[in-house]
Amino acid sequence: MHAPAPLLPLLLEEVSFQAGGQRLIDGVTLRLEAGPPTVILGPNGAGKSLLLRLCHGLLQPSSGRVAWLGPAAQQRDTLRFGQAMVFQKPVLLRRSVLDNVIFPLKLRGMNRHARAERAQAALDRVGLAALAERPARVLSGGEQQRLALARAWALNPQILFLDEPTANLDPAATRQVEQIIKGFVRDGTKIVMTTHDLGQAKRLASDIVFLHRGRITERTPADIFFTAPRSDEAGAFLNGDLTW
Amino acid sequence: MTTISDAFLLALQMMWQGNAELLSIIGLSLRVSLTAVVIGSTIGLPLGAFLALARFPGRNAFIVLLNASMGLPPVVVGLIVYLLLSRSGPLGPLSWLFTPMGMIVAQVVLITPIVGALARQTVADLWTEYEEQLRSLGLTPLRAIATLLWDGRFSLSTAVLAGFGRAIAEVGAIIIVGGNIAGYTRTMTTAISLETSRGDLALAMALGIVLLTIAIAINTGASLLNSFTRKTQGA
Image (cartoon, rainbow over all chains, first blue to last red; front, side, top):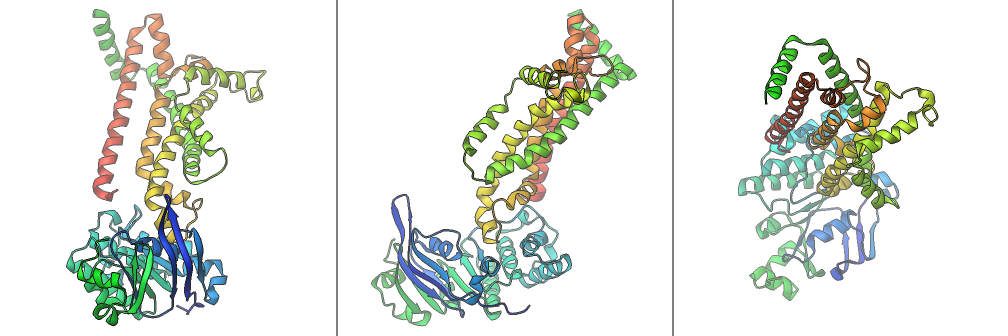
């Protein structure tokens, strides 16, 4: 595939998000560059999933702005198609495994032959090629998540948002998903993910964004974060003392 | 009591012998109602999906109206279609009054709101589940209509069957618009109505049995389809 014009960096400036009179994201400023994975950590209810949705454009901020600074952001199609997201609970269409991967490729105007080939390659990559003709909804939880990742991989996104991709998976399935994520990283896709699994954050993250009650308390390289976090909240979180 | 059992036996005999009048009545009923279901679904399914996804002023009022139209009284629909198709009505030049075409029109009016309202609910539920993912993949709500209709195909078949059930069983609209002309616009329901009032209970009973059988078959088919897809598709 040809290298498309870059979409990144992504800049969030003083972004707030309110719902039901509550300020769930509160004045977040964050710049995401192309490069190794960024992991968003924080207790339940800190606003991690909301932050991903604001970045991805699924939610509009109540105030502040979300801006893509790369030259490709000027073209609507690259803006829409250059990013992908995989959700905690994968949403699969009521079709075959292969058709689930082909579906978004069709939207992107890829011809029949190219999309079949691309989809097949994506399934090979996540080890689901043998299940291509199965209805997607009968797959196990781990297989469903791998299929969601294959669907995202086929799109060759510049940035991939992952919302707790292994939250409901057993250790073996978790390891498979992490392998696939590392594959994305090797291909040069920027990974931005949330997780509850500190071991996973250590294995994957290059830098950590720590979110607490809708605010970013620190952003630190991963090796420093886990040994000497700068904010009190993050320190308490790592010790298991921060309840929410 | 003897009347009932006599009529029942005679009915079985007619069915067994393939009575020509009986067969032609059943054939016309199926032809009219199936055609009406095809047309009603062709309009109702996309309409329901559009209402589930589009946002426009007056949408809520339209939905209330559509839901209310599920219970349109057949005789009133029959009367209105009669007036439209009558010689002096706006559709008079078509000469569809007292023809199977006119009956199809009346049944389409009855069925379309049923299919549309049920489809709207199904598609709205599916959209709740799919919205984030489809938007993430780059789909706008209106472009999602075809996707959601296809992915909801198993649930939507229930809406279509409900429409067919309504059409095949109703008598009020087609008796007014069709006129119950023997050999031309006489259907199972209009024949039952007429034959009962004339005292020819055997034919009425035979048609009643066929109607019940069709109703049971439809419901059995629907529930079989449902459990089959749940098992094989995980839907």
